[in-house]
Amino acid sequence: MKKLIFIALTILFCFSCSDAQKAKKFGHGSEFRIEMLNCDGTVARSWISTGKVQSGKSSEGYYFIDKATGLLVEVTGNIIITQIPEVDTN
Image (cartoon, rainbow, N blue to C red; front, side, top):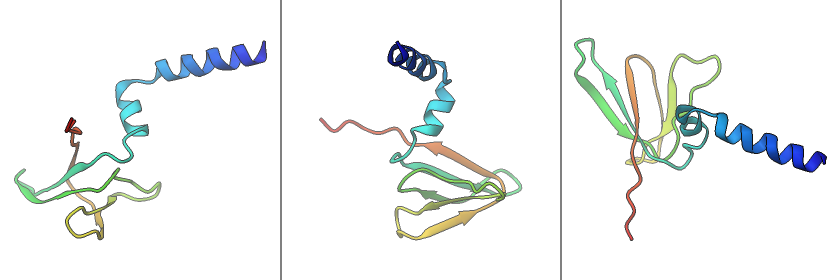
C-alpha cells in the first residue's frame, strides 16, 4: 500500500510542475544563448553555453562554460538567456 501511495504522489508531482519549472530542472545538457545588453538595448556580447547556465545563491550574476573557448564565463548586468532547441538529425 505504501508503494502505491508513493507512486501516486510521484506521478502527481511530475504533472504538477509548470513547463517553466520542468525546463529549469531538466535543462542540463541543453545549449543556451547568453546575450549581454548595453544600456540602449543593443547586444554588447553573446555566447553559447555547453550546458545549463547557473546562478549562485548569493550571486547577482550567472556563470557557464563557453562553447567556443571551453572557459568559464561569469556575467552580470542586463542579460538575456535563451535555451537553444535541440535539432533531431535523424
